[in-house]
Length: 302
Image (cartoon, rainbow, N blue to C red; front, side, top):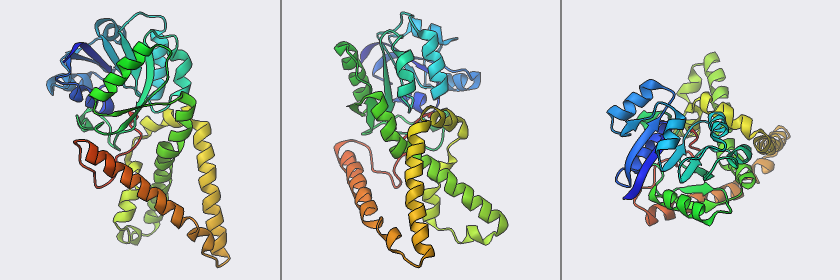
């Protein structure tokens, strides 16, 4: 057991899962949430041991604090904590790191992190102690070796694999690996909805492939609005690249040529095979089971 008290601001999917995983690791777990009902449920369900009335109280009374809030709320929380002495370690789990780096630099013992795990469902009811098992958990570099050691120990106690990466590099990569899949799923779902409103047979002719493609479309826009706003540049770059590929394929089909579209199949299959092997390797190396559909790589809640 790690001596000390863990504090979590935001008892949703990610914050709740961290609390459940921390059972038996920390002496006690305190929580803060702006929604009184969520805080009450966290207490009644045994997710947390105590409720803090405010963020500053949580910070003053805990040894490790996790800010598990949406990107915009995380930015505001870090701004309030600038220069305030607090815990030995304070981290956030937002899926965008660059915009938080400057304000976070003013917070003592802060280090930005991002677990690559999550689900399309949000809220404390979706929390799962095994959510981070075998997942990559990114963290930003820091000059304080002791702080880095503490954050790595925290990540490992969550069952995840630490990965150090600079904030700007992180944001460019997750624009492709996490944010683009979300946007494409939403656009596809909107296209399906519009077509189904005109012809109900559209839904009759959907198979499981469409359902799996739309899993991320269930994610709430309240979670994603601050994410796409904070990482708008890199996401726009990836969207335009995808649009160029789709436009090339469409132009070829209009000309009676399938080759432009077919040219993507080999590399797409290779990427899918490599990712599947990566997940399978992680499953063999840890206690968790490989899911039927891979987990959403962006937890930002998420």
